[in-house]
Length: 210
Ligand code: SAH
Ligand code: MG
Image (cartoon, rainbow, N blue to C red; front, side):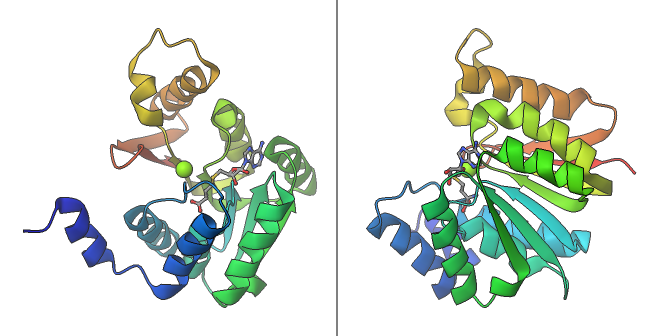
């Protein structure tokens, strides 16, 4: 007998490029918080289904999710990835280059809220957003995503259950409070149609109505 987790991992067949990113993250003592393999594969499938040509990622780390997103892009498509830590952004870039995706990605280093402000000034628009950075800012990132969204865009977010800390409405800490607010808005904003998958740490997918 194998466990359910082993069975799924075996089904996904995470390739050598992605395994190498995970391995290097451990080797560099970076946090092992890349998106789970089956969710990475879901990102690739969502990008392809969406026919996305422009993607915005918030939180690059080692480029694991970036590779999954960029792999789904149409020819000529582009991923903009926002990362606070310059060393992480450089490392992520090197991993996308190694994956043969270097020409599809642009990293912007600094606090994501500032990069988003700049993107808005530039008039940038995106077909898909992947939110996976600092949790207290998720509601701010949602505001920007709605402003930068093309009609029918997808807004995808990781860690929306926050280790089940969202389940306690009395938990006053900034991250669970912000995440509850984020989830409430996905559920109630008339411009959004959303679902929440209780996979790993919770994965939300919302569509911006055209
Ligand atoms: N999406 C990645 C994992 C991201 S981990 C993957 O699945 O492969 C979260 C990342 O967000 C970290 O690299 C962290 O440095 C970055 N981060 C934290 N605060 C941020 C901020 N204010 N702006 C941009 N990035 C931030
Ligand atoms: Mg995450």
